[in-house]
Amino acid sequence: VGQLMSAAWMNLQALKNQISKLNSAEADLLDKSLALVNESCNEVRQVSHNMMPNALLLKGLVKAVQEFIGQINQRNIKINLTTEGLSDNLPSHIETVLYRVIQESVNNVIKHSKASKLDISIIKSLDGIDVMIEDNGIGFNLKNANKTNGIGLSNIKSRIQYLEGTVEWNTSEKNGTLVAIFIPLTKRISPNL
Image (cartoon, rainbow, N blue to C red):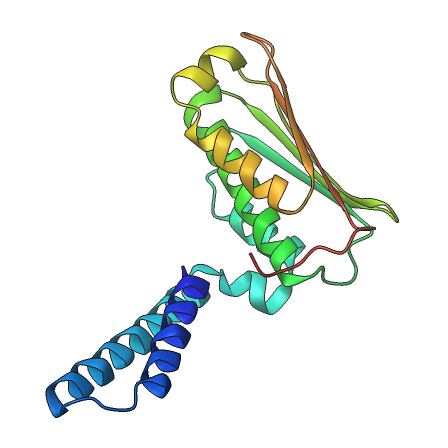
């Protein structure tokens, strides 16, 4: 949205520079339109920055996930987090996507799985990042979930595809769920989409 708004502002600015004669009412309307689009760009940018968790900005993915897990009441579900190879921060767009996907997956487990145990692993290797989210809950029928209420799964899939990664769900009713994510680090991934 921000990029579309910026393009609209640039087009209006180019139009203003190309038009040689405008009466005062037309010039005023064009200036007001430019100001509104510019203000909208600033608002979108501000909203975008506010959506990024402070823990992620200040401490990186691992600490942000630890803080998120720490906010969950673990009386009913025991959550284990394992990380490896993540001493340095990842590019911010990768951290943001992974954080949101982990958050969405954990929320799905809490809301739907009736699990008592949840294991999360985030492992960085030379090839990429593997994220595994596994619960011992009731599982679900993947085909039915895609047909009925698969917006959360579609959202996760599109976020991972944006990073040129893969995501797979291994689940069946009464057998828990495993979400397996791989993000390649060997390709150049653009933060601008």
